[in-house]
Image 1: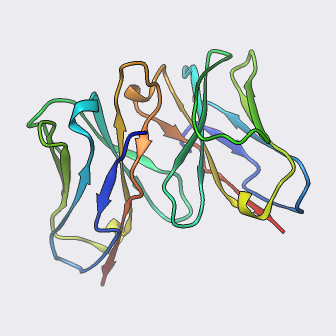
Image 2: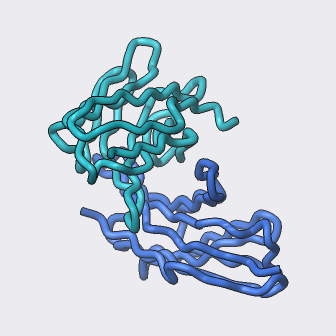
Amino acid sequence: ILNVEQSPQSLHVQEGDSTNFTCSFPSSNFYALHWYRWETAKSPEALFVMTLNGDEKKKGRISATLNTKEGYSYLYIKGSQPEDSATYLCALYSGAGSYQLTFGKGTKLSVIP
Amino acid sequence: DSGVTQTPKHLITATGQRVTLRCSPRSGDLSVYWYQQSLDQGLQFLIQYYNGEERAKGNILERFSAQQFPDLHSELNLSSLELGDSALYFCASSVRTGGDGYTFGSGTRLTVV
């Protein structure tokens, strides 16, 4: 059973603050890492797919980095806005006969206006 | 609209009953995945179908079963329901595997009373 850990579990920040959170995974089982953004009462939406060690992806104020050797990915949000409030999920695809994504429990971000 | 249609959105039923959840994948996607999210738990993988055939099985109870039909829509059947089965059930689809990334449906909130 793959163990994908996310920390912190929840986070409250003031509008305008920058923040980051972590996704850890077993480095020996890595094929790809996905980040999703999940707003309350909606379905999770894809943010990034990361496959290469050292990968950096950016979408607006949100960016992510990947370290496959040590088994972690960081998600950064610059200048948080209330509309960034959501749960951020990371999910590991390990390949090697496994067909599905294994999800972490998520980091719930609340941005206070 | 993500392109993945999941019905119903909400379901309230009594213990011991049987329910069917339905999912139509995004056009062009051959794989359908079912996940369960209970309180304080992450998305737990239940089962995957690819082009009509079961491909991967996770922590799916024997009381639960699923299938994918020739038109690629999928149904998840939950029987002999218990209070602990109350959860949010998500369907997701992908072209082939989790490595392609998921498109999620809006989820079915099941409440067993």
